[in-house]
Length: 356
Length: 71
Image (cartoon, rainbow over all chains, first blue to last red; front, side, top):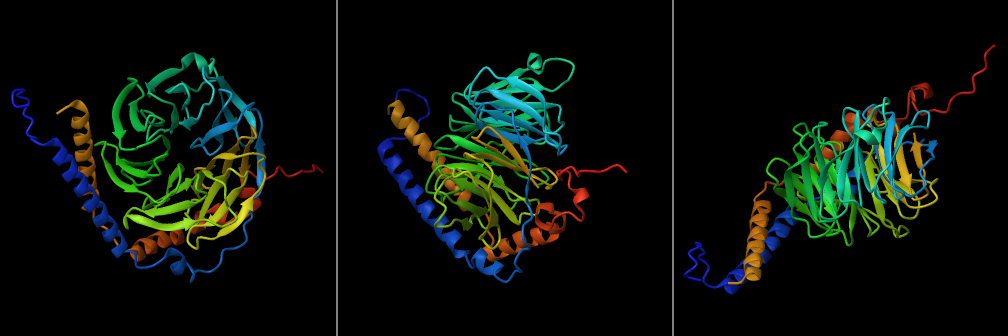
């Protein structure tokens, strides 16, 4: 040891690991204590004083048929009209949700296309899955969309989720290899990788705050991690779920995140209180949550479940308001349109539905 | 020290650093945080069409096409 000259100053590594472990325990206990100190009231108690909500008038408006496999992911274009969806059979489809027409259909060189995303310009989509890759497709009516495709980045396991943070220039991905990664689209280069999860990353969301440099990821280690995109550092972590987290979404103000899990609950974690502030569950709900989203004000929390339903929760009162029936298999993806006028859902029943 | 011990040590150091960072952040009371979540909803609920509905169904881009009759 002494002769290696590597500048290593640890004489007794075993003791060091032990002392570090002790410090970890101490810090964890302190964190819990600090968080508990500020837990002065329950969300549902505060919300009791609010007026009850008017009756919901959300109806099924469109059914998008065309996939020949389970729909796994979907995303709205910022034009509030087009939707990209991807499926288990390797197809990616661009829909005009107003007319239900298919504008493009692309066959990927892989099955289980688990992730797809619209670029902010509306001129490009990204997708990937079991091929471990994120590939972009510039959209044009002049030529075959597949002819212009470009692979941007590769993970060492499947890609489970992706999004364009703020511009068409960058893509953020999450993977079964436990990492998230930020890629430059133009150069097809890795800009930053994010290490911290102890299991597959299943979902990502970008903070809606103006700076747009914060994102959250969640996955099979039952943790939601908040990251600083510039430094690559994890700034906050949230635990509480008793099984895999499948979906995570920022509250519209950016001050909180909601998560949905295989433990059949959704939870709300406040970033400034640094703790869980609500659990959305019922004894009769026993199936896992795959996807969730907020209405534009944050008052509704929509969640898609493995029991084929969409439950609509009152975010503040923490009660279920209604159930949206329609799908004939697991609801895998769910997104409120950019202007908040509609809700899209995708399912293992091969269809997407628009509710408004 | 072997490689395995080295990497365990480094990992454990990282965990400690991470927890120290997280322990040092400033927090607000849950009551304060909730008030702000509530306030955001109150300021935006008029624009939440799924919550308050459309002033007229014509404004709904996903309304059913009315079966119009030309006279």
